[in-house]
Image (tube, rainbow, N blue to C red; front, side, top):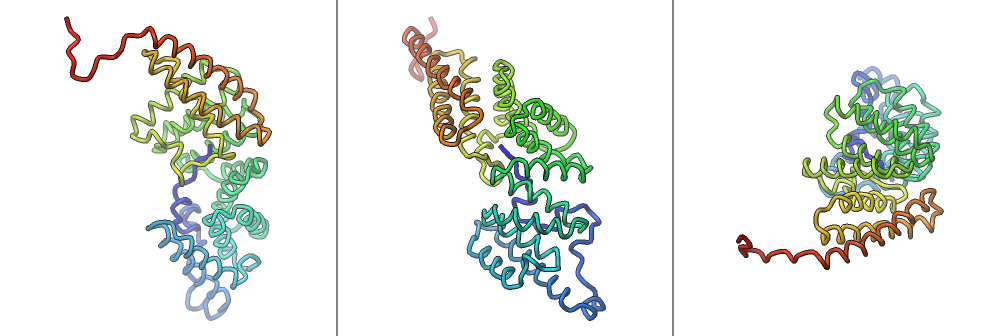
Length: 334
């Protein structure tokens, strides 16, 4: 599970993601235009691209307009241009069109060519997202590490810290992942990063589960669910544009753990039976996807699936002995 940085998701001009005071997006003066007309033209194209991209963010996603912007940049030779902003623009459009292989390719070359450009801080973050979508966790870890090395503001560190923890879990380093999720929670407690806390708690729950601490995992999962309910965002894990899972079937592991955690403390056998049924369904979907991909956590998911099926059967038997709920409106007082 990765959280997208809102400023990048909503297609706000890419250069605005750099630190305040950076002059990445400063228009050339009249004298600079006269001295270097080609650079002035490149900047004008950059500004036109950003204005058109912003318009696609205020209505429904307009892939057609983004394709036209892509064509503009390709015609201008943006991929190998001497203006760094056009290269970063091109990578941004590829990301918005969900062409993450090309986005990563352009970003790696641009960062190598312009390592000290003011907009490169945002480029590292965009590269981390692109590599995350591709499942290239080594690239992702390096990119998030660079983001955190450069960024000092805690609010801006919240999402990279959260996502780096997820990356560490994908790479099998559960100790580092658990520490990372707890660091994200610490940051969330100090800055207004509203969604970071429940998402970090969810990640912590899954990491604890995979490390063998089922009781702590289920406790954290229940806490995450309650936080999201209190925020009025119970479906945040499925909020496209804010959260993404790589591989996509991994969301079923989170949802299965949540259902199992709730079933464990359900006061009604009927409620428990339904929750265990949903947990088994979710873990079944995870196993199906994981088996096809050779998932590292497949054995744990299979064990969880077997447990959910067994607990469902037990809860069903208990439900047969449970008094029927009173019909709505019926007075059952004596």
